[in-house]
Image 1 (cartoon, rainbow, N blue to C red):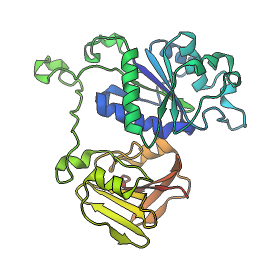
Image 2: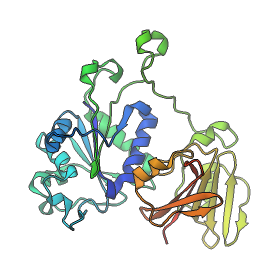
Image 3: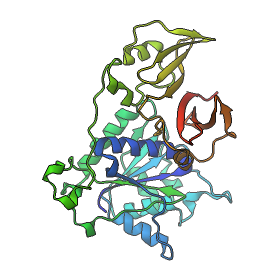
Image 4: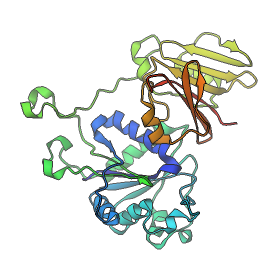
Length: 342
């Protein structure tokens, strides 16, 4: 099970971890990233299982958000003080084996002081940390990818590994992890034996295109809330004047399925709406994704879902933003809104 082990706490940074997983899928193929919550074997010591899984990885990413250090259980006890806490067990296992561990600081989070950590995690603060910010997510992910490539041993591509040597790892309720095997694109299917034709291949990545071209709809958002109207116009090559909607200004990009709304007072981006044919991801979610995936990733919305133009609106507070997924009658995402949390 050689690869990268991504350690995170769901109630602290699950949105970022899920989005990171999606980025890795885009770069290495859908089958190159594994995320599972049902793999722990019943009847066996879970600490021993975790220890065995971590021992086989090449590098660990410790995703640390604002609530990582002080996360509490239902009794009010700090989780890191519990020597059976999943996050602590995984990181302690890696640190004692001197497996490379990169602390990944989410949206301005900082590492706690060494003396505040349990003894088996103290050396974590002596590891070089990297940032993962909402406003520079793509750039930060790329920097993280380069750092990981320098740490990982060179190996045969994953599709030629012996079947007995490929072990799928597990994740679970309090924490989760993601594993991928870096490597080149699998060989062309014409060179494979018939029995190997079903092996996955990495999808081609479509480069950015102009608004008038059909490939534009597959891109993720390239701007963030708070950006100026001039930045949005430059990023999306908009040459028209904005329309007026109440006290807001806006642009509608029908070929991309994106609408931008700006505060009229300072002309900063305050709301983003995406619909079909938008094919990118917002917080790791695509138009057409099932509601089950939303609930698994983000949990229950902060307010009871409400009716909106025939859909059910599910709203979440994520890193200072309100992200709303409108679910249609088929149980799939029809519209996604992002706005600043007031």
